[in-house]
Image (cartoon, rainbow, N blue to C red; front, side):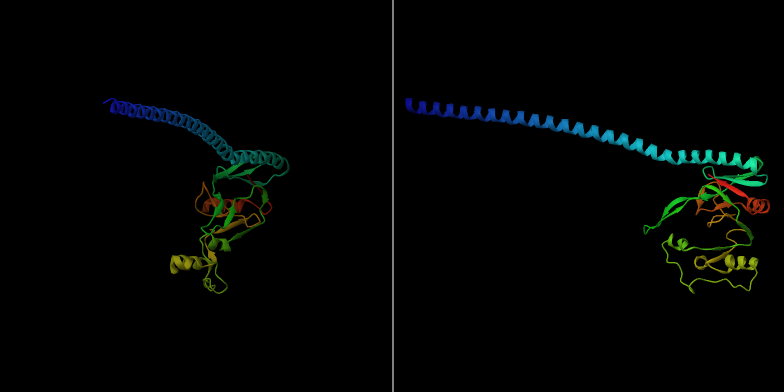
Length: 260
């Protein structure tokens, strides 16, 4: 009887020792995992702090980027005011001021306001679906009336089609309006006799610019157009028919136009 009891006690002792060893190892593993979790928690907190810092920096840079156009407009406005002060001292005729920020025009003479109203100016950077990019901003600074004209045609440049992801028509592919018609008859023909799909392929468009144009050089015109009060044009200054006719008749060739 003694031998089986001794064997049984030995087995129990061995089992207890193994259990204690296992518990010890598990405790060590738990402590290791706890340390590992604490380490990862520190890393997560550090990364979160970096992310929050980057987010704040990004917001600051975004605010700074957004403020650049406003600062540029203020600087341009100040320069125009200085140019206008010099102009008033030496020029007695009519001149025009274009504010591309407020999209307003101011016709002045000797510093006195003669006429004011809304206009549409350049819409800035534009891209088509193919990734082509254009800067359709209205150029700032002092320009002068180069020439004026009545019943102008709008000769569509290639970017008109490219902006719509279309291929510009080759010679002979564009739709021509009969030159036997008067300008007024051509306007009616364009609007009433052609479908919208056909009008896309007319390169020389009568009536699109209104009845008058005031050319400031470099492809920049004062002409009729929609979207007044907003930045919508491809660089030209869009006016109502009434304002356009008034400026056409008042501004002489050589008149200064201050744009900011």
